[in-house]
Length: 338
Image (cartoon, rainbow, N blue to C red; front, side):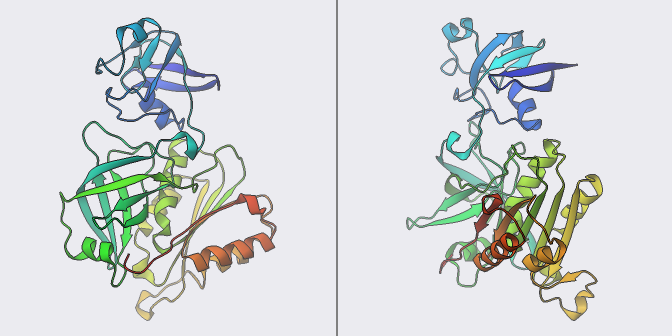
């Protein structure tokens, strides 16, 4: 059985199955309610029940006092609806609404998906979760005080593990550690979330995603969030790589194309090898976009990759009518010793 949840003051509405918490179903439907631990310990998701009945669930007394409960307050990470409910709470609309945290994490799984790309699955402490917007990044904090930035490749609703796509940089301190000595169960510290590269959901314009290499990571998170939120906008992903072996998760993007009629995947190889027998698009990824769209005045573009790709793309797209304020980018800068 499902119940209708209405959020005040926005008047957003969504359906909440009785077995899901109000927060779980909100995130699943694409509504960003604030949260911290997701298990009734911190109080970050506290809001008011204006109408209806809920099962308050299990929570810690210091997160919700009896006085607050009698005043109509509830923790949306533990409360489940028993009837249709009207709740009052702040919704997360921008990066500034999300607190930046410094937290430990454990490397739960290491998955080598290409000769030079490792996917790290990071698990947070039992009582912690990281709230973020799809596309944002975290800084891994190294013991020498330096930090390395990596985009979050998972969507906010899928936050049991934080997923990072790490490319091995020759001579890189951290990436060398990841590929040569790091083992599962290793403990890391990070700070985040950071960044203004996230999906603008208040627009109805069609979207072009342009990824270079591991620039696919934040765009993966954005797309998975968009699919989860039942986004109906036309979305096209251009993913550029040097050769076929550098296109490290093409099966996933191909699967999305099969499952979502509003999504198209166009891989582009700049230097395909003879053994690739590549039948698809070649050249620079931003040029492939420019070749396909003479008029970008009605689009949004999200680009992530090397600075040269991002800058060249912006120039080419603006020349085709893209408004500058509809170009959103995250340029990966590889400092010495990454």
